[in-house]
Every structure is written in C-alpha cells, then in structure tokens.
Amino acid sequence: MNSAWDKFVLIGAAAVVLAVSGLFAFKAFSFPNQFMRDPIVKDDTIAENDVNRVKEANAIVKANAQWELPMKGDPPKPLPLFKSITIVEVNGNLIDMMNPTSELVRPPVSNQWLIEHNLPFLNAAVLSQDSDNDGFSNIEEWEVKTGPKDPNAHPPYTGKLYVKERKSKGYKLKFAAKPDAERFQIIREPTAAWQRRETFIMRIGEISSDQQFRIDAYEEIEKEINGIKKDVSELKITYMPSAEKQVIQKSISKIIPTYFGELTYDLGTVEPQNIKEGDTFTLSNDQKNKYRLLKIEEDSAKISVESDTGQKKDIEISKKS
Image (tube, rainbow, N blue to C red; front, side):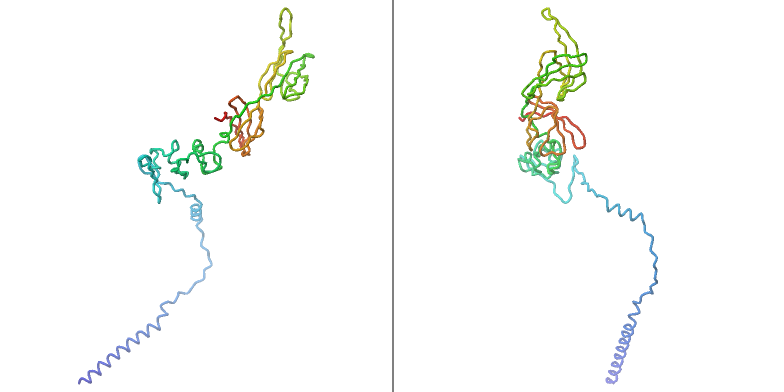
C-alpha cells in the first residue's frame, strides 16, 4: 500500500515539474515578440520654427545679468551672499564696514569706499599709498572719486603742477614821429630780450612785423609846459603776447614787460622750461591734453587745459607749499 502511494506522489511531482518546464520554455520562445517595434513610416517634412521663442532665448543669453545685493537693516545696507560682513574693532568698538553710519576707520574716507575698492584698510598708511602706481595717493583719488586701483582713472595732472618762478623780459617802444596823416613811426629799442633796434612805419589796425603789438587808436594831444607848447599825443596799442592794452606817449620810451613762468611737475617734466604768457606747453606723460599759460603772478598762475575732445577749462595753480 505504501509503495503504491509513493509511486503516485512521485508521478504527480514529475507531472508538475514537466508542466512548469513547459511554461518556462513557452515564455522563453515568445519573449522576443514582446519587443517588436512598430513599422517606421518615412517622413521628410520639417516642422516650422517658433521664431519668437528663438528670439526670446537669444535675448536671455545676451542679457547682462546684474545681481543686486538685498538691502537689510536700519539704515539699509547691502547684505552680501556667501560672504561674511566685515567687522573691525577700533578702540574697543566693533565697526560694521558696510554700515554708512558706523565710525570711520580711516577718516575722512568712507568705510564702504575702502571695501568697494579692496584697499588694505587695516594698514594705517593706506591713504598715503598709491595702489595703482599712477602718481596719486589713495586719499587724492578719494577726493575726486576716481578709481584707486585703475591707473587710467586718476585726478587731473594739474594737481601735480606748481609755480616755481616768474621771470620777465622787457619790450621797449617809443612813439617817434607821425610822418603823414595816416602813418606812425614807432621804434623798438634794444633790451636783453630784443637786442636789435627796429623801426616800424604803421597805420591804425596794423600789427608790427615782429607780431608783438597792434596800433588801435591815435589821440592828438598838445600841452603847454613852462610856456612852451609840447606834443604829447598818444598811441593806444594792444600788446599781442598778453592781449593787454597799452598807451605810448610821443617821444617817451616805454618798457612793456613780457612775463615767463617756470613750472615744476611731480610726475615728469614741463616743456619748454620757460613759458611765455599766452604760449602752450606740454607735460611729459600727458599726450592727450593741451596746456597754455594764461597769466603768471609771483606765487600763482592761471592755465588753460584743452582735452582731446575740445573741452577747455581754466585752472589756478600755486607754488608748492
């Protein structure tokens, strides 16, 4: 009995094994059919571009994204991201370098300006330093709000220009005679600057051949001196180097001074060394601006500066203290 039952169980187990094996074999053979692709239909048409979307994307790419720091606090101050706020201890007080109401670390310069230009504000000599080697100290750059780290941005060169000395040379004239109703005889007498004597025969409105003066008007004057009538007529002239009006009296010599200025320049040289009033001069390291000496006094001078764009500005300079 037991032997028959064992055979029955064995036959049943064999049948189950065969059935499972057949199921796996069937699935294995049918597996590739589950990944069959749909037939491909050839299509050569090109979809129309969305021009507006392309333009929008192009504009975004070209746009210069400008990040603005959020403002926080009272009073508001910029709050840097991914960077700690600079705090400095001065005389036992903690100073927020970005707070515009905080105590100044290097007066009179603002703390924010020092931070903005990345200057070594912990160095006591920071204001006297020339961070970009352009000849101007950081405090000089602060005073005119130029970039202390940019050698092309600096105060005007005239800030380093000074009066050294005023010199003069005489131009000597004498109204000698009136040869006829229209002409006048004027003599240039010798001086250290004008060593050769020269005679000019001129009419009103004419400029002398040496380009130094112009006759503007004539006034006939006669005076009685000690009972004797004397011709003291006057010629009114313009001295061309300075555009000054002068009066020369008949038979009396008059010296008209021509002033020259000698200037010094901390960043280079001035050419020429002696500059006549009204003449131009150059600074050795400035090829853009044109300089002219307008007026020279004992301790000061007035100069004109013309930029490469044609803008003119008059500036006063003085002796170096």
